[in-house]
Length: 305
Image (cartoon, rainbow, N blue to C red; front, top):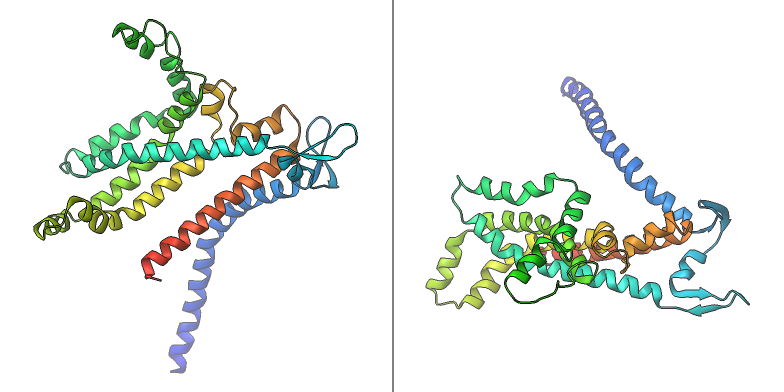
């Protein structure tokens, strides 16, 4: 027993060293590239802005107050202003619309791919992902060329005789929404495809054999199996959409601000870094709250509590 214990002890030590060695790179990456930047943004949100950018190391909550209030230039009093709340609401609304549209397009697309033969599935997945081998900036500019007044889409519409003048397809909310859907559609298709591929279609046939209606079969058989894919896809689309920068800037022409553009403006043109940092922390907090709520809801569904 003593000899065996002596052999186990070095083995345990070597396992711990191996575990620590495997853990260190991940901890280092998370600390340097995730925790440290968020900590810097958090600290900057409580400082005063410098005149030409940067911060002055004096504690201040002015960045957070500026989200809801506007300071009077004469007497310095605070007056409620909903301007930034409107931008935040617009961002949430555009992201929600984008998520719903991506869901409506992705469900039949993922079902179609999952029901193809094993030989053709990789081809369809390749066709879904190949446009995304190109940089997002280039793809967004290319979409703008398609949507502009003298672009091919307007020319085709005018050739059909539906209208004599170009439709306003660019530099508006429609163009921003289309750009968001175009940018994040694969993030919805791929999780749903994965969920559909794991689905045993014999369960659906059994439900129909037992005289279940299409509605009952969908909500009782298909939806519970699809739920993880739906949640994952919705989060992967909604979270980057709400902070999107390129689509509102290029396709919206800078006329319609979203929260990502507002944050970018504070760090580039307005030189109000604490306000930009405060907006970033608010966006991060909202995102974390949604993620935690979804995780707890999913855990309750899985455990039955």
